[in-house]
Length: 184
Image (cartoon, rainbow, N blue to C red; front, side, top):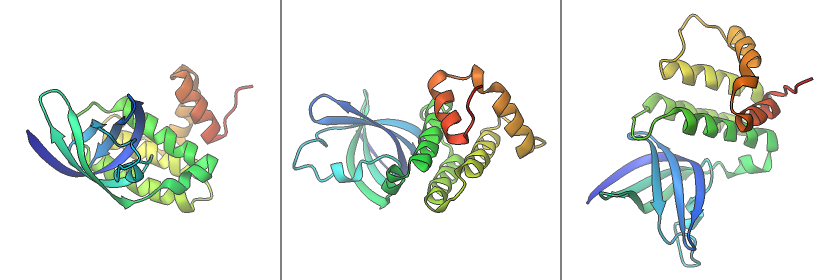
C-alpha cells in the first residue's frame, strides 16, 4: 500500500452505500482522481465537515490495487459561500463539469489546478461572472494544448455561442444560464 499527500479541489461528490462517498477531485500533483471516502457519512466522522463542493483541501490518500481511499482530509480554503449565490455557483458547476468531462484521470495538470483555484477565489467577489468564466475557459483550453495562442477572447466568444447547440444538453443548459444566452 502506498500513501499519497496532495492538495486538491473537490469537484464532485456522490453517495455510495449507507456511509460512504465517492469524491472526484483535481489535485495539484496527480491530476483528476476518483477517491472512495469510507464511513464519512456517519455521525462521528470528523472528515464529513471537510467534504464540500469546491473546497480546497489537503488530502492523504491510500492507494491499493483496486482503488484510492481517503485517509485524512483537512480544509485549506472553503468555497461553500458560492452555494448561496446562484449565478456564481452555476459558474463553478460549469467549470467542474468542464474539467471532469475533458481531463483524463491520473494525468498531472499543475497549471489547470492553479487556474481553477484562482478562478474559484475570484468568483466570490465578482460582479460579472460571464467575463471570469470566459477567461477561465480560454486559459484552460490553451493550457491543455487544445487552442492556438492566436485566438482572442472575442473570437472564442463568437465560436462558443455558435457551437453551444452541438454540446451535451446538460452542459449547454448550464452554459446558457451562466452566460445569459437563451435560444429564440
